[in-house]
Length: 269
Image 1 (cartoon, rainbow, N blue to C red):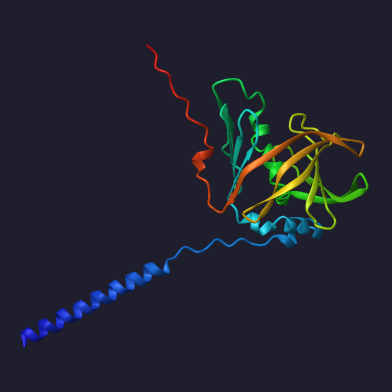
Image 2: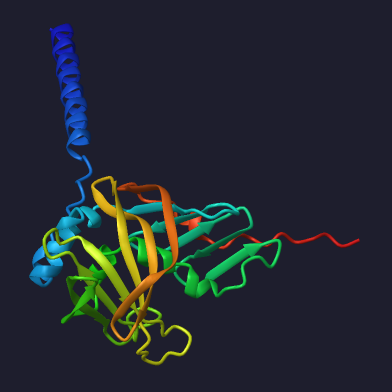
């Protein structure tokens, strides 16, 4: 009889252990990380602006991306730009210098005086031009219908974009987005620069967006052409920038990529 009780006890313990193991496995399987849900913000914008975003792949598709990489061609060596699309931390690399923004400080690393500009001004300058029109979907922006831009015999409808007080480093900047009425693709961008003066400006520079490239579903530029522009008249091309090796990814970049490099201490004798 004792042997029978002992046998029953062992069987009960064995079954109980198996059930606990099974439950543990089931619990582990059920704790699968939830997928990040990205809301569609299309209805948050004027109908024309939403149509422009849609013509370039959609604002929701852009919001799903976490990293944008592109290279700006240069005879002396390309500039590689990497931007965290959620934090807007940035890094620019060339053979002659590295420049970045970690969220607080814009830093510059170089062994020469090749880069003579302002790192804070430059760290996101080309990103803003390249990531158009999507950066015009940022928070704190106002949209106002403006006069059409006339180029030769064609008119391009447009919007004036302005920022709320305290938005970004240059809240007094204004942008003027002009688009093709048929395709709704972006065609020209007018902009003012107030970073240095901190005062509103009436001087408008004009960029023509002439060629496009499909970058993981986003229609982004391959060529930007700066045009002569005065009193509403569009003139000849002054200069241009070309972009290659572009990629947009849902993968989040490492925060260490944007950190200021540590300064090596030199040993003294």
